[in-house]
Image (cartoon, rainbow, N blue to C red; front, top):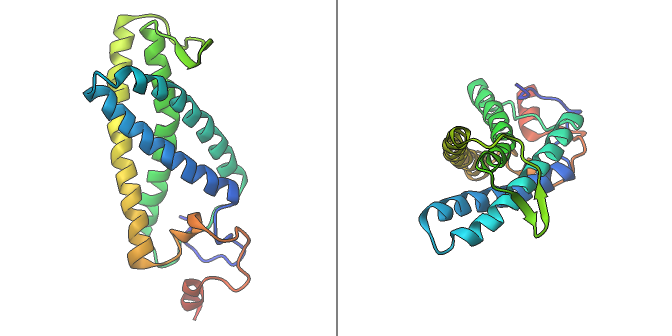
Length: 198
């Protein structure tokens, strides 16, 4: 569960992970609000769509880089004070976020392909289709894209709530591990680890 003490483990996520985390947080929040705006405003819809498509592809590229970084570099363990069920929920929600961040852009791309619409990143630069033109597929992909977008919204709210709980209530270093500091291992260990060892 990664909530056992380990003096050789890093205290913070590495710099690449932290930059990608906050960059993607802004991009995903923007994407969620853009998605809501696309369904509620006819006036702004064409302009929002022009932003939605390249931003979705950017998120897809960023999550691939982030996943590679996650697999190759160690992450800080959760404090020993975190209950096992919370540790399980934390890791499950993180991997669910990865799945959603990866699948939603691909699903949006497939939806446009099925509807015979180009995925335009820049004027004159369209991505190739990844699904055959089909009204049935378009309807299925579009519905699934909407459902997963709402699921992502719920997971993001839960993730943000947990982060603020650790930052303001528990103050156990979970939030700061992604916010600041060196990613090098702590030679003395955290205060929670010392207390646990006594």
